Length: 118
Image (cartoon, rainbow, N blue to C red; front, side, top):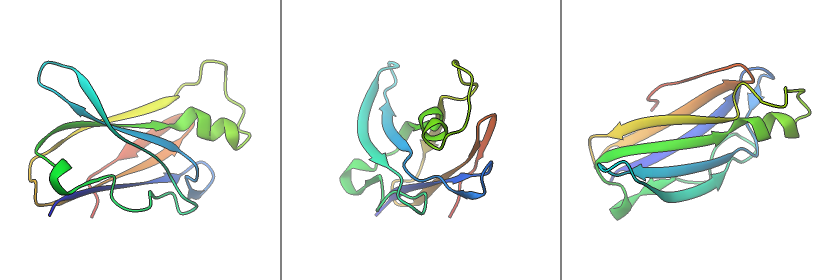
């Protein structure tokens, strides 16, 4: 059975991204978005369990949104009123409904990276 997991690492401060609001959307072919899940990262920068699994885990295009600006402001990071990175979107495809997809986010106030993890 397939599943989707994620975690966040704060590369600016060298720690897990704790308390980051995450939203997962399914993207329909007509361009509409359906909110599937909302979660907050724990003290290890992870969500407690998969954010998508079972019958809900289907082949398709998805969007993860990470509230990075809110996270850095809560840590006391001084950001401009209009933060360079506020909500970080990661759009990706799930091609195998039986696989484990892991989408990590490495974040700082001025840059981020992601990859398909294990």
